[in-house]
Image (cartoon, rainbow, N blue to C red; front, side, top):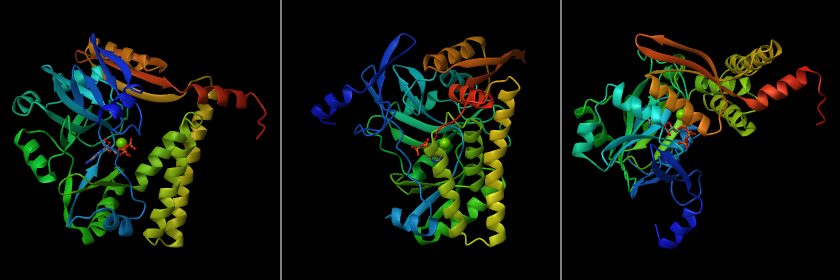
Length: 364
Ligand code: ATP
Ligand code: MG
């Protein structure tokens, strides 16, 4: 990046602190460098690039890829983590460029992945993966065989340039270090990819899984596509907190459903079923939230996390430090761990639902 461009960027960097070390990060898009890029002790850790989406496979896939072959991997529903080693410390960066103390602790103590030999061999590596599982402070989703929380690698980049390894090299390298990875459905001729994805997506949908990410062999071009189950899950979630989620978030997911229904040439009957499922996702979750507030409860994202005392305290402090209002539901011990269940209080939703239930009149 040129000096002038950097000066421009520098004004928009946010300052943070992690265990007494100051760092700066890029908090949003359109700054000439990926959101989530971090500067820490003279080291640059690039953000993970935004992954574009196609609404229509048959046209979108060949349009997007100039390559002969496309690798299709499963897209997991968890949170994006970049792992880098700075000054001897293995640190976990979340999407927006914060060092998450809890994830950093997890990587070191719980995730069955030994990152140290990797950084000994490749000190400049930026290991990118999804942290998944039900006991997750950001995006909880159940996966069979993941009881608590797990890491699945899906990319390997140079931390300073952001350049990725090719899909093949990356998969071999992680394999050689025994690091679990996202599933690879296969590598297809670009013209056969849409059909292959459609098949994979049908299977994933039936299992309630999220979707796929397609990648050029050199991993520089990516494209995502999600299942109806994922769209519905997102909608149910967003509509359970209807006044805290941006309306654009909901609208985009509804649009995806319409394009999928048309591309897949659904019968009227099948389309009606889709409409029904969609309606349930939206309305039943909202109804639950209204009832909860009506009965005097509060609504908000609920999460359970497991760890040692300090890791849990650090997480709570980290989340509160971002302005979240947390309500602890239970704080107990299990097999030597502290298990905390908390809610990220959704302020607007709680307030608005309360007001409307009390008869506040809306002027629209
Ligand atoms: P984005 O800006 O990347 O679109 P988003 O928050 O909208 O971010 P998602 O819709 O979840 O994110 O899609 C992109 C994310 O999918 C990646 O940032 C990554 O965390 C996650 N992901 C899961 N599995 C994979 C995979 N196999 N390859 C690449 N990314 C994956
Ligand atoms: Mg995601």
